[in-house]
Each structure stands twice: as C-alpha cells, then as structure tokens.
Length: 268
Image (spheres, rainbow, N blue to C red):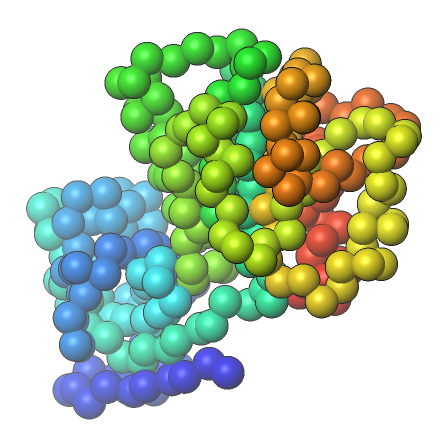
C-alpha cells in the first residue's frame, strides 16, 4: 500500500493548485533530499532549466530510486542550483512480487544498452553483466568501469521513463565463474539454452509458481560453451529451453522477463 504524507508550508498544498507542466519527472539522489526541501545540482538542474524549461511555481515529480516519490513545487532555479519545496511524499513498495536477477553476457556493439533499458521497463530487480568464454568484446578494467557507469545511467533513465521508483542495481562486471556464486540461497537458478532435451518453459512455469526469487543466465551471441553449461549445472542452475527458434541474445532476456511477469508477476 502506498503511504502518502503532506507537508505544511506557505506554498499550495493542494496539487491541483500548483502550476503544472506535466508534471515532469526526474531522479534526484537521496542525499539531496531533506525533510521538506530538495536541492538540485548538476544534471538535474540542466534537465529542469534547459530540457524541461520549467520555472518557479511549476510542479515537478521527483523520485529518489529507493521507493519514494515527491510532488514538489519549484521555489528557485539558476544555472548552478535549484530548490524545490516538497508538497507531498509517497512511498511505493516494489510493484512486482518477483525478485528477478538477470545475468547477461556482454554482447557486441551497443546491444547491452538496449537490454538494460528494456529489462528495467519489464521489472528486473538486479542486472549482473558478465564475461563468458565466447564474449567478443574484451575490456580493460577502466573500460569495464566506464561501461558499468554508463549502464547505471541508462538504468536510471529507464526507471524515470517507465514510472519505477526503485532503480534496479547494475552490478560490476564479473567473469562466469564468479557469477555462478552470486545467487542467494533459495533462489531459483536458471540457464537459458536452445536445446530440445532441456525442460520446456511451460513445465518450468507450472512447477515453480510459488517461487519469488529467480536468477537467470543469458549467454552471448555464440551461446554458452559446453564447459560453462556443465559448471552452471554443478552450481545448481536448471537448463530451460525457450523452444526451437534461435533467438538473438538481446531477445532472450526480454522474452523470458515478459513471460515471467505475465505468469508469475505483476503483468496482469
């Protein structure tokens, strides 16, 4: 249940009394939010001034990535900083009953950007990028850090666009062996493969309707190497088939996420 809290001020408390421009929605880090004020610095200032072109007395919706949404009114805005007055504060519990972790092998080009954006829209909880033996882009430590930083910004933007108030976590890049040690005890562990001998998706859904924690793995363009599949099985991962058709790596995660949310989650 959402919890709302109104704030006393000499500014309008009724949202209908506030001059509106949407209201538009932006992300602000929790450290810039106090009991009744929000301070804008850096990118949020640029977005409010130059992109949204808002002015004092306009309304603005703010989310902090940790479950809180704020209806605010702009008090002041300058090229360097801005001040918002909190009119209403609402806490939103995570909508999806599923805790979904996606382990995604890093694909070529900018495909990972697309996967992260759409996975966030579909309700993923955490994303674990990893290198497999068939991963084509080999990154230095510095390149990997920059990639993760970029993916986190994409995750933030996708959360803002899709109305999520909890920003999913994008974890640091790891190798496949380390990835296999990450699932929490009790999580349902799945490795997706095109193999007719593996358990079909329908059977998986029918026998796991009460599971709420799911950690699934998607390979790179060339798929998982045989030894990687063996390692995953030895770590308790269950091989699941999505059918006979060959799906691109960017299609696999989004297909599985969509089906999970429809059958077991909040896509009703």
